[in-house]
Amino acid sequence: MKALRLIAGVEARARIEKNGLTPDLVRMVVGASGGPKWLILRGLDQFIFGSWLKDAAGPMDMVGSSIGAWRMTLASHPDAGGMFNAFEKAYFGYRKEDGASPQAVSKASYRILNEVMGPEVCEAIASNPQRNLNIVAVKCLGATASQSRFIEGAGLLLAASANAISRPMLGGFFRRAVFHSGEEVACSDAWKDFGRIDVKLRPDAVHDALMASGSIPFVIEAVEDIVGAPGGVYRDGGVIDYHFDVPWQYDDGIILYPHFYGHLVPGWFDKSRVKRRVRGRALDQQLILAPSEEFVASLPLGRIPDRKNFTDMEDSERLPYWREVVDASYRMAEEFAELVENQDDLMDRLEAAPE
Image (cartoon, rainbow, N blue to C red; front, side):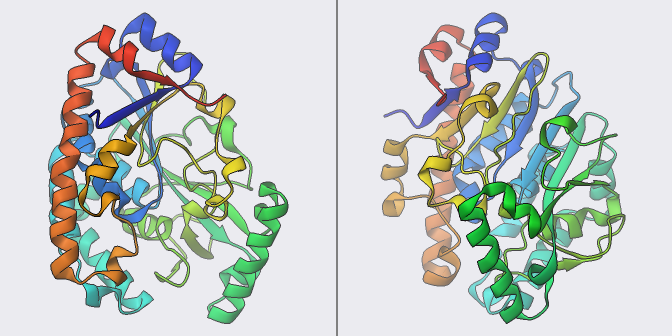
């Protein structure tokens, strides 16, 4: 049984075939929204960021929303491997009572950030010249920015209805906000839609930017007035960029995308819209690494973790389940490590991205 799928866009495949898949070929790494789904990528993250990309010539763009933003932030530290180890330990410290209310979830999340990313760590991340970190959130407009759950809910319902008609209509309810540590947003010209707000990431804003990026409505408190950003209410970047549908393009190299699935969903409201799954030019330079269906079926409960685990499982059941998934995730890392050492086997394993 193969644990890992490798899905390559047309240009990505051509560049890998010509140059080999080496750390110096990677120009961007992308992380998607998905909460505890990241645990299936735990082993891959440790190998990719802790070992394989550690000494890449760089610089490299790192882009993520929600938990993907947290992962890309960890990966932007000079000691990425150590950061992922610390984060796993802190993440496993979350308990069911921490999810009793949006206020409790926010408190627990800030506790994790303070435990893993103190001031010196945030400074090292924001000032790392080898990594241009891009934390993606949204700035809420109109009713979606309300502190009233009723009014906010009505705004979200209107946003979902507008999105059903046309995805660009989301721009009437949210603006894309990108907190970038480099001189400018990664591949800036490729994704200026949704009224993008560019914010230079300050070390003292890292925690709030990450909290905003993962601030799911009704689950976590919104974040207001982030240092360096225009005043207002900021929420989950996955609203617009759940898995990203952006035609990022580089003159050379590839975009690496360790992902929970073999497909990409543009925005949070598109999860059930199969016809909107990303294809074509947006995938042209991407190499997606994803668990195979057979591998997922072999996991405990036959699925990868998700946000429902926090509410549907007791800690005594959830934590051992998560531990088994994390342990199993290293099989994906082992396969990838073997493939990058054997070009012929790697090329044989590449699947074509949907055009």
